[in-house]
Length: 359
Ligand SMILES: Cc1cc2nc3c(=O)[nH]c(=O)nc-3n(C[C@H](O)[C@H](O)[C@H](O)COP(=O)(O)OP(=O)(O)OC[C@H]3O[C@@H](n4cnc5c(N)ncnc54)[C@H](O)[C@@H]3O)c2cc1C
View 1 (cartoon, rainbow, N blue to C red):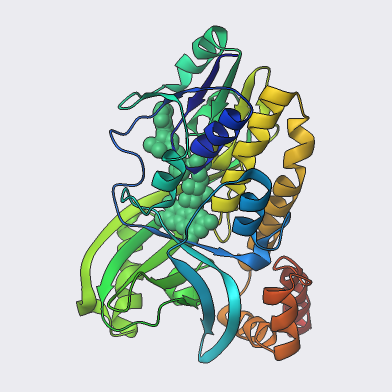
View 2 (view 1 turned 180 degrees about the horizontal axis):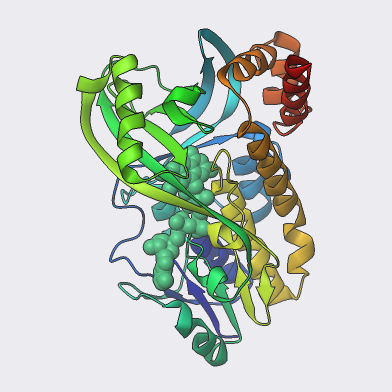
């Protein structure tokens, strides 16, 4: 069976991993000369986002023998809105290295696969149909929306402007801080993730703005938080998110961010990318229904999209009230430890607050 994977990122490599287990050695085309991001990103996964499993790493290891070592666990999550600060503690999730180092998530996946790999090879959207003629199946795992856009599959796409910076200082490993302040990041948020006791990465995400405006938000944030002078390096990137009408077109499968599996609110997509890669491989090699397997992922992304639509209307006061409730002991237990209350349920609560304020 001849399978081509476009993109050697999280979803493409996960697809290759599962294909290998099912007896297929795929061909992978990757536009970069290296595996993994050229910058030292950190990725966070919070277990409360699980739609399929409580502890995804444990699940992937048990069911698929996939061995991924995170940088560390998330042990404390601090959320700040206006002057209210709420902390939740426990085994809340994981932090991953995303650079090109051997410890990165991408490199760990790469070291567990067998494939015919073509690096420095950009597959243009107009070339995908030709690739599909030469292979039994093609998996689009490009982390971008251009190929689904080319095929007219995107129901909606969003570009989020991102500035990240590495800071020098003193940090508690496993402690993630998130600011939800409309004057810092409009409807999205900023988060700080330590990579060691001496360094942390801070990431600002703002949607629907130019890079010039991003600079204004960045300055506002770093001067108000008095951290403007702590940065060793900063870089800008864009994050693409789309929601697809369908994830399969004949023998072409769309997974990861290109398959609408990264939500457009929190921008969480690592775990969905791994699961999406596995599901595409099982559809290709075992004839399982791809649509049925990915349905929980797509449903969850849709729910977070609805939360985002609500967040677009929320002001700092509503955020403060929501975060206060999220931090209450019983509620935080239900959300973060048992996943009983999902994040998107807070959209309904925010709607209630906004309605009662307008009365
Ligand atoms: C700044 C930032 C921070 C993030 N933080 C988090 C986080 O904390 N937690 C979380 O869960 N998610 C996070 N995400 C989202 C997460 O990175 C994605 O959900 C995940 O990487 C999706 O995997 P993927 O395989 O779809 O795409 P990627 O991992 O981006 O891989 C795509 C690969 O395809 C290659 N490629 C692209 N186009 C082509 C082409 N035409 N031809 C050949 N190769 C191509 C790329 O070079 C890349 O290697 C973040 C994203 C960004 C941008």
